[in-house]
Length: 111
Length: 112
Image 1: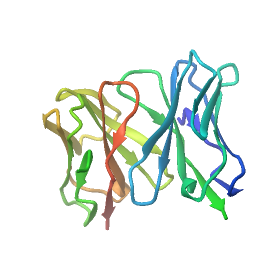
Image 2: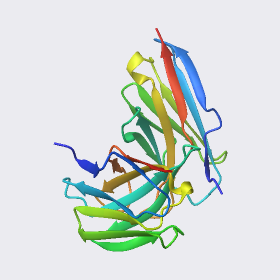
Image 3: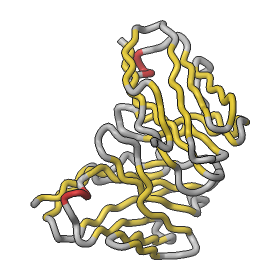
Image 4: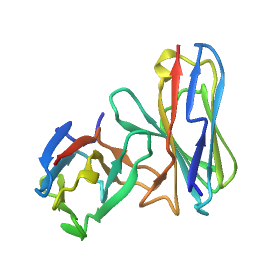
């Protein structure tokens, strides 16, 4: 039973434009959300997180938005750069010691 | 100096064999994890350890046996390997049980 869903397996965006990645979740007990970035043959690396008490968190070019009523979060990357081409995983936590991940969205930034 | 290191990075073996994957972290974290990424690309929690104690066993078959000799190491031993065990296994650590996880590079296991 997949509790975190990333329904878009891929996204192609032109360099300099905005990338918007979406994530939906079903478990209303989730209270902490994270985005990870993964390059081929490497492990995922932490990008940005948000607690359920907030609806927005910003870190440089990356902003995460949380809509608790819709059980939806999104990651905005502005402006997109070639180095942003990677797989992005959405993750959520309700309990200690466990993160539930989505299947990932592959982002390709075109020059 | 790699923060979370796993060995081996690639492992090809026959069905029925037993194999181990080792993981070490030099971040001083209390909590370590094993995640499995299957062919559908989902990252699924297998085990969580906190200070060498098992916290989560996510209905993993008994053929999988984690061992934490100290809080910097979490090894994964797999008995009687099956075709469905083919996957990438990621080790991770975190300062506590919540928040950011630091992942190793992954170990790709192929069972023939």
